[in-house]
Length: 204
Image 1 (cartoon, one colour):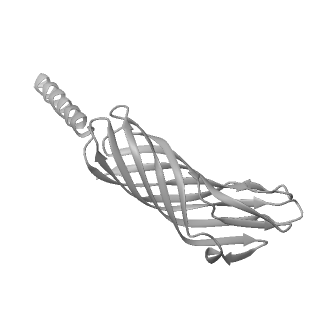
Image 2 (tube, one colour):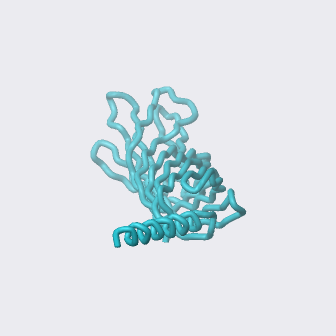
Image 3 (cartoon, one colour):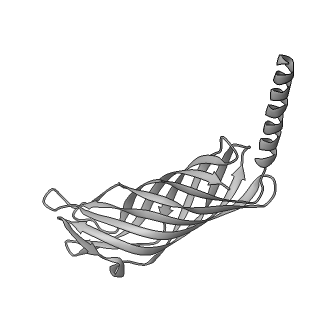
């Protein structure tokens, strides 16, 4: 009886392993993701006041899919809600100015499957600003109409999938388009988004 139970258990384990291997292949699927972002602002242009940018935390989450292009490559489109922004510091005399920028994001990435559990991604991302809040000296102002509503970015990262259904990943997003400008001493300093994300995935 004991040998029968052991044999049955081994057969079940082999069956589960075989199914997992089969499911981990590059096939079409749909999933959800949620995570944290660490976001800042890239300043450009003249900077007489020596403006600096500090990073703030945010949220990211939404849907993603997998469209196979063979055994090793696939396209991963995503539909996300992203919180970006940062804190601009002028000097100790002025209060920091904090920007909270909320986006509807559409990344489209090329994914390379290194194996069943590790994958690399790189692509482009379009961002549509939903609303924007500027905070300075305790005063909050809606500035969405003062900023550019649409931006482009490049993005890349890696994913680790310990099982077919669950995975974790990290990604970096570098803004290519100017979000707007911060004026100090009569000089306008354009700024762009700068974002690092860590997310958890679940595949249906």
